[in-house]
Length: 288
Image 1 (cartoon, rainbow, N blue to C red):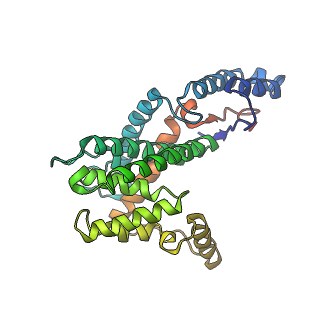
Image 2 (tube, rainbow, N blue to C red):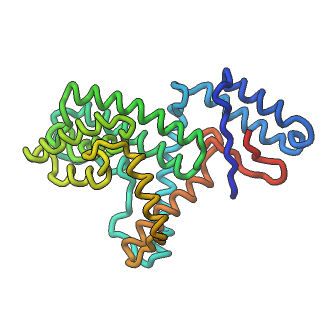
Image 3 (cartoon, rainbow, N blue to C red):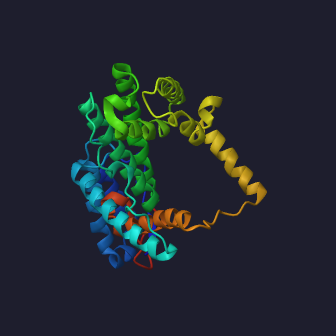
């Protein structure tokens, strides 16, 4: 299935104004051939209008995404195992779906909040990578901005969440959210400093600071992530580097599993979640 991206113009006054714009620009023969697209688009923009925030998913959409991601994960585990001739003893599970550690924690409500933030972080990114639509990308940015504010509030009140406070799962959630706070370099620097102190005091596992600087080496350098990432990309292109092809079964499984999950999710995402319309043939799916 091929997909065509649809992005409403930023100056549209309302979601239904976007629909009117669509109908006006596609009047005539094209619209008559593709009446189903009008209905799909109206469904999409009506959903956009009903969201809690300008680009947020509705609670029912979040729930639907969760179900679809679980199905995609199961499908990908099976297909990757067949393709690579190897599967882990325990099926791979998205980080936000792993069962919470059984050990008691001192801040269970905070752990619950962090895990909810992590689920939004991971779910919105899975949709973005599968759909590759401008709207899904914008929704990730919208969620990241909200999470940065929440991270600041959490650190101001509690300090860095530690294993004793939120368990291993909560610490991992904090780590992922910190990595994705790229639009606030000062916040990332603050979180890294707190990680280093907490690791030194054995309040979190010792590997977290090093893992953070490996993934976001721009933070100790005081440079925006995009600047370093684009430089790395340019260097690889100039060197003519070929994509790494996994040579062992474990690496093969990880790589193929990711691809299979994204493909399955892409083919099953509803229009209102993906932010794209399926291409039905001649005249269909043209960008607005």
